[in-house]
Amino acid sequence: MKRLLVIAGSDSSGGAGIQADLKTAQTFGVYAQTAITAVTVQDTHKVYSVNPVSPQVVRAQIDAALGDIGADAIKIGMLGNAAIAAAVADALDGNDIPLVLDTVILSSSGMPLLDDEGIVILKKRLIPRAALVTPNFPECEALTGMPPAGEHRLRNAAMVFKLLGAGHVLFKGGHGEGNTVRDVLWSNDDFTSFDAPRQDSRHTHGTGCTLATAIACGLAQGYALPDAVSRAHAYVQNAIRTAPGLGGGSGPLGHD
Image (tube, rainbow, N blue to C red):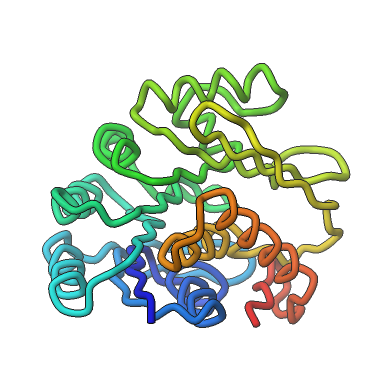
């Protein structure tokens, strides 16, 4: 059985974060271990508070997971602050396990999920280490200074990521406009689009977490990166279609 280590925050509503990661890994038949970075208080409407785990405990969780069961891929989600980001970077120094980095900076309701010093560590130590970086439009703008709206800006954003040391970036198009959602994979200087009709649904909580974890599962199972992205993209679209309709806000996906 292939193994995944997820480094991310806990979502009390069960729709995103570690909870979504575990559901996704189970669907793909991958054994997931976790290193929890923060405990959040949230529901389908908003994030009410973020309560970081100590960096020492985060590091200890990673060391325990990698030292015993090991991992064929790693996914990083919410880090929370610079101290935790540094502890994670330190823990991953020296290994070559494929890493999918979901650049979680803001919640959909606008709550900051990584401080400015943490963003610096993300840029300097984790983006160059990643096999794939998966920013949405706001995260891309925060990291590169431009949203990837339109071909020209997309190419400019890709060049900024290249300067940061990234070779493979998936620009997620959920925050874009129009009737088509377009995710664009920039890999080895080539661009590949993954398109889907925009679904009229408010139940999209945890789509970014789910997508990144599904891709990490594919890498753990030996899929080539474009194939892992394609399978994960289709899985998320189906998860939106089959959402159980829970909560009064942005509800959870159907992960089955």
